Amino acid sequence: MKFEIFKYENVTSTNDVAINLIKEGKKEIGCVCANIQTKGRGTHGKKWISSEGNLFGSIFFPLEVNYPPFNEFSIINPVIISDVIMIFCEKKKISFKWPNDLFINGKKICGILQELVTSNEKKFLIIGIGLNIVSCPNINTEYQATNILLETKRKPSVGELIKLIIFSYEKFFINIASYNYMNFKKKADLMVSK
Image (cartoon, rainbow, N blue to C red; front, side, top):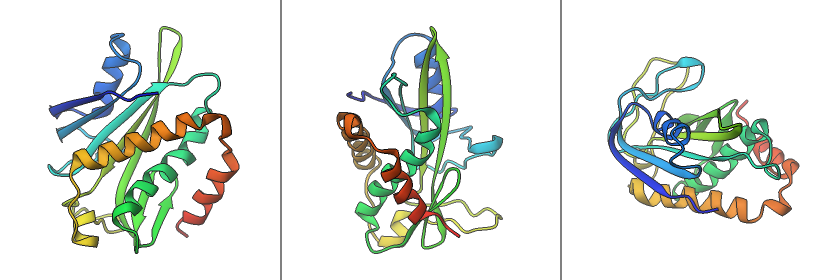
C-alpha cells in the first residue's frame, strides 16, 4: 500500500478533506495534510486547536478483509505514532491515555481521531493526527500540553514527520500477514498512563 500525499494550505479539518476524497470517489488511500485547520476536532466533539507549524494530517484507507478491525486500530495507531515521536524524543517517557492522547513526560503532545466512513458499501478508516511540533495550546484542562521543540530543542519539519508516519503505516501493511494484536496490546499497555 502506497499513501499519496495531498497537501493543502487551509482546511476545516484534514479528516473532512479525507472524507470528501473518499465520498467523491476520487481516492481510496492517501494522507491529507494542511498548514492550517480552522475546525480541527478531537474526540467527543472537542475542538483541536491548530496552530501553524504543527502537524495536522489524516491517513485514510479501505478496511480490507485481511486487515485488523476498526477497534484494534485504536491500539495500533498510538503504538505506530509513538514510535515516530520517539525518533525525536528518545530520552523522554512516552505514555498513552485512552482513547487517543499521547503524552511526553506527562504532557500532551499528540491527539489521534479515528473515524469510520462507508462509501459504495466499502468501509474506510480515517486516522486524524494532531502533533505539536513548535507550539502547544495553553488551555485550561486537567493536564499540560507540550511540543517536540520544547522537549528536545529540535524542530523536525512537518514534511519529515508526515513521511515517517506514512513509512510506518506502509511498513505495517507490508507485514500485515505477521500482524499480532497481542504484540501491539502489550506495547500499548506499557504506555498507558496511570
